[in-house]
Image 1: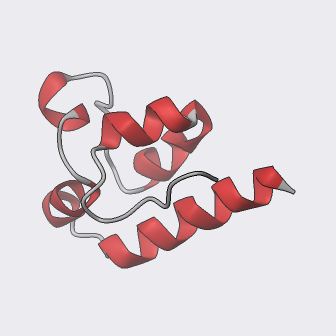
Image 2: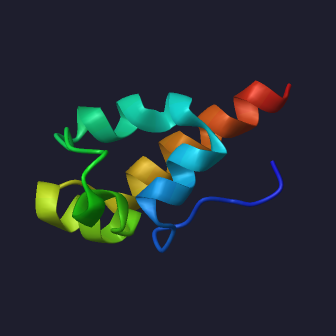
Length: 70
């Protein structure tokens, strides 16, 4: 993976890197991935709104992306 996902990564950028990351956002209750305000949020902002641990979500996404490289 060329770039690690961080809490400051914009959700739309994560989805552009790999659309298969969408379920991670759906799991936290973020069902409006296509709406402009949601896709323009950082992971940290989305997690704050949805009451989820941003560090845990970032870890899961990075592990998923790294597993696809193998």
